Image 1 (tube, each protein chain N blue to C red):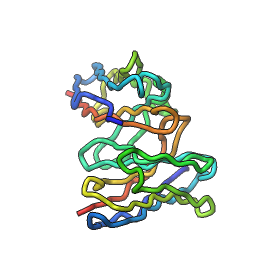
Image 2: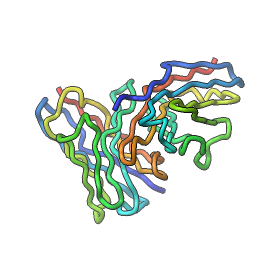
Image 3: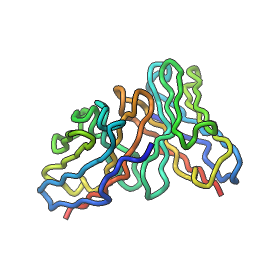
Length: 116
Length: 110
């Protein structure tokens, strides 16, 4: 069974940096695409970034230039390096596995990033 | 990229149907074959219930159906059950490598 576990969330000051990890099991990181999606508790979902099987990455306008998505296919981990954090980046960050070309069918339980 | 617009809430009686919309633009829903819907219950992770506009993943009841017309997608839940109370989010692929989510609709079963 595919499973993903996010770690690395913390309280950080504005302007600070943080690196999130998403440990993937039950499927090959190299053969799938993954996204980071965030949610302010009680609010909507906000797409952050995607990393495709060929290792290309794309970011939302709100994080472009500040966040970097990468992976380690041998460790089966997806990373989200976040720099120059802003108060508005405060959210639960989910890692999700891509399904087909435009959906996400497996989600982790998220990790909380609090910028304050 | 602005969030897709959904009504904040919708409700229906037990056993009845509820439908609600997800409005976007020609640049997202209007030009995408990849509209999906997610169900989120408190304390749970998002669950994919519709992909590629109308398709249901294995295990999702056929009470859930969806459609798209122009720049608007719609989700219908028929034969409402208590367990259908949740927040529902739509999503669309934008171009070939970006995504956008909706604002969410809280469904209440009366």
